Length: 474
Image 1: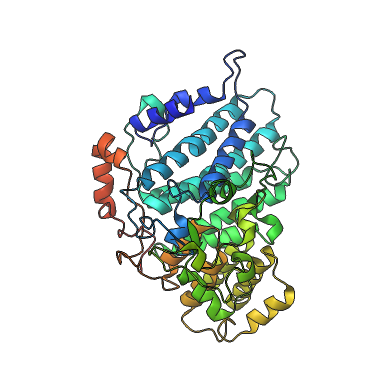
Image 2: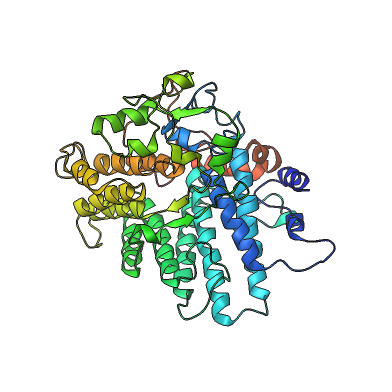
């Protein structure tokens, strides 16, 4: 049934999911409304799964960020993205099982007579936080996208595309409202699989999503960025790794991290750490290498980016990435710390110094991965790591360590590169194509929603991988 429905979604333009998708959640023998909490869980887990997968058929962000490279297939690392139908795969995954389920969750919660007023407000706020996160990710991947008229099913199979900056401004309004709506004195989800009913941490997540949106705008609309970033900071951001936006996958096959299926159950040997990444970490004697990488090769040797690589000749991925209960991570203390360092460099009123936030970001990443305190201290004392003496501009300093810290979060690592133009990445060996600035729109959109697709392509400056997003000004 699922395959049939997904196929129909493609035929109807994937920006607007078919209403028949909800049939997946209906027992035909016992018809009933699906609880909003169930749909919320489904949508959020689908988002973690999609963003955390490494299937070359749906998610190649670790490759685009040049943290990993391939062994026997090099199409993806040479950025042949359109012909691999990767835009379609991600578009389908986010508009369908993520955003559509979250939309239906909202509708279900609104009409649920069994929820108390405070519980309803909290659940709607949680749904909004997840929706805003997903929408921002889609804008940051494609640019202008269907938004205001998306997800209307058969009532609108050819939705218009909204301006990316306009979407951002609406997301800022929505995430601010969600923060304000969270009621610490009321319950939330019966089974809160993210924060276990801790409303204070939900509020920190909402403020942090707002802060991330604001910092993306720093080069495009500095005044709005400063206002929103300072307001989010004052609201209270993620303040430790205990506040991270994580999904605790289980130590069983049914609910395992998607990497377990991609790397272990598949029995394939398709990926090794790239020379781009390994060489940077070797140059810094980075202690995270013992976690990020296996010790099958001493010293660590990265596969040539964009070239055929013999799996046995290069360093392998760290053992932790083959485990079933590896946590999924969509936002963390390290990320917020580096964004705070940037904010301080830009003159925003966000408390401490850029150097302190930069140090905090490195430390948060290392603590998350279990690096020993002494090794952290030694690393931060290195002249090429210490903020006062590390080479380069503030963008280069922050960008390099931010990119390293986003290991296993390929989309954010690539976004760091696009935002800071640092660190320097390599051209793929086979083609020499430049690192993409965005994904092109799905071919299905140009075929089935051609008028709106053409308008969007023109508005952003051309549907090309090298077309910069609106916030990528320099």
